[in-house]
Length: 152
Length: 329
Image (cartoon, rainbow over all chains, first blue to last red; front, side, top):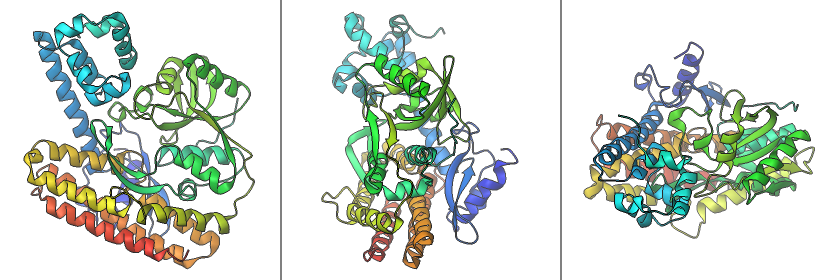
């Protein structure tokens, strides 16, 4: 935490009428924000609202990092299975792009069951180029990258 | 080169609207843009999925601030989407060359200047482009402290990402911007509209009833098989929707309270000032709810979904009383 951001965040915490106590504030809360400060609205000691730059709030940071960790876990799991050949590289690349079947389905326009079906290595290997093209576009990869996996 | 005053804001769309109007000669704060557009709400929408979870909204649909402000101020936006990315990029360049700063809708994920952990697939992020230097667009993204740069390839990807709420390269800028605001007329009308959506929504998943519905939903998950794995992720998702997605704290409650306070001063209306205090209390309760839910997820507190439901019901009561105060506005 920088010197400039410290007092600002405490000011936010204190103004929230005991909802957030000082002792709940960890020293490094900026993980998800990557050092960025975001603007929040809080009341000062005269009860007037003002914008305050904050380094983040622990529950929010926790929620974000947990969500990111969960998708990273799914990614690593899919990578391990893809290396064993039990799932297609597509599943790995989907998670690597922070998507899950619901989002990839919305992005490609195909129903979720169909996207999931493409995770089967045999089905994926036989996808025609025009269908691969849609995944290439949705995931921002080349067709070659889509069929490959990162080096071990 | 356009001189564009970058001003950080809590939320992207309110920030872009207030910054663009200010740029075009009508000084406006972020809370005022939010309040005038009557955009505060609560909605639990299981049909729309965000990261595979139900959409929980504390404000109206994307675009409602842009259109809502225009309606209250009797002005217009020139708003355009593109079926071809090439046309969309050409149009952007043409605007910038003619010296016009334009707002646009983008996907967060493809914007390179976002911190890695904040990059997720949300297609309705707003920002202003005000220039181009070589391959880089000069971008005023209001949720950041400073202006940013975005290379052309990323910009194209961000503007034309497909999926839910796809931006289709939307560009917009104000036309016929008025030179002043008739607060005495605009503010009460805006508040009345907002009260309607919060208290008189025809479906039980929107407004104050929606808050209670979310409480029941959490309670039900706590008693089922999803308790161990799904419930913590679900609660985390609620906290993210409430705090992370640029809400200014407590799911826009603090921004709306700031709007009421600013209006109270402009109209010399003590009722609005009192109402702001009342809404701040509800906002504080939202924050307490987020804190408790997080503690329960982390095992620092016993998981008790009845407590969480109780808190949401308390919030619903507070917001009900808050809107009752504003009946006479």
